[in-house]
Image (cartoon, rainbow, N blue to C red; front, side):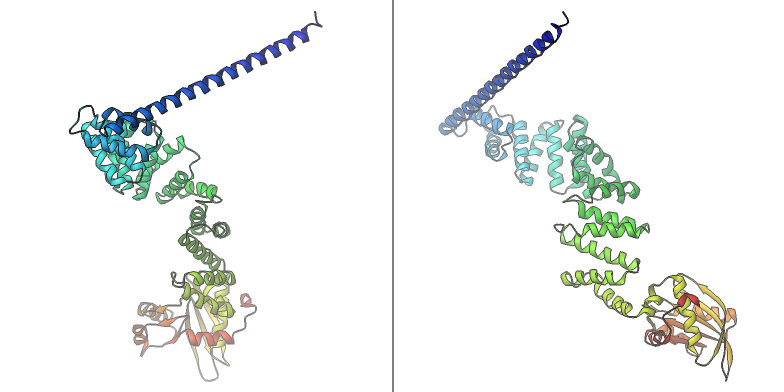
Length: 455
């Protein structure tokens, strides 16, 4: 008996396989027969409708039968003129369902790029049946296409109330809010659309961008990072991710984002240029001036007047060739103060300088020192501005108040830029000397570059 068991098992398997083959063959024959029947029915509709229309172009039944066939097949181009005829006949001939004909004419029109015509047809249908899902949905879609965003909203919301299981309704309503920059309102609809279609990268990017604009950058960044390699949305995602990382001080991550972004060579030119500009800015923040200059010159070659590229190139080329000026403007706080101390020591030749106090703020440094020469001695307050623009009167007034506060005999004010006319007028008759860029450069050229931090 035990010897027969394997034979029985094998027999059962063989019989099962035979049954399965028979079922599959039978199913294929049924499908083939059904397809053949459908094809035969389709050809009958086309031939009979064409025959009737040749005899009478206004034959209602033939127009409806042929129009509905093409409509069901989504052959919008062929269906469109048939429903145009039906709508045209609705006022003079019986048997035309005017609401249905206008609805289908509207659907054909929006799907063939004729939005104004679609609007007229769908409005006519809605006057007859305002509760119809398709009427409200397609009219909302048409208004969105026409950029009538506010008018589209109630129609799309009504469509969702009638039928909550149509992904495109959520998609269009979400995009509608997104395109008119109502980012917070777009979020629930974009999320719902993605529940139906999680593979849609366009919806994913719109969701991330909306989250970012609505103040949820920490959630948006995860999506932007996910999309960085996408051929269509990767460049914009890299730009957004890089801006986030640069804003939060993660410069290495930002550099990586921007570098990936410019590799998307098929991205729109404005996105590529903005990404390059942000990359150059990030290099500057990282004190990598040579790399920044290379990117800025690349931008200038294709977009000479883009933002302040020309000014940045001029400024940072000078910095790149002048180590002390680079330290003065973009060096660390410690390096800047060490350089200022050296300038103080070297400012009066053959003098003995004793530094009493050093104060540093975000935009300047102050050094209070006793200076003694063969002919005189005095207390002097030195102020060093790191700005390259125009230093105004208010800053000089503040400096003058500080001189009086510490009871310094004199004040020396330095800037890497210039002084306004009002500032120059203010210091007349007051114990303040102004040192601007050209004289500062002369001083910097006389100061030793090495061992600044030893001061």
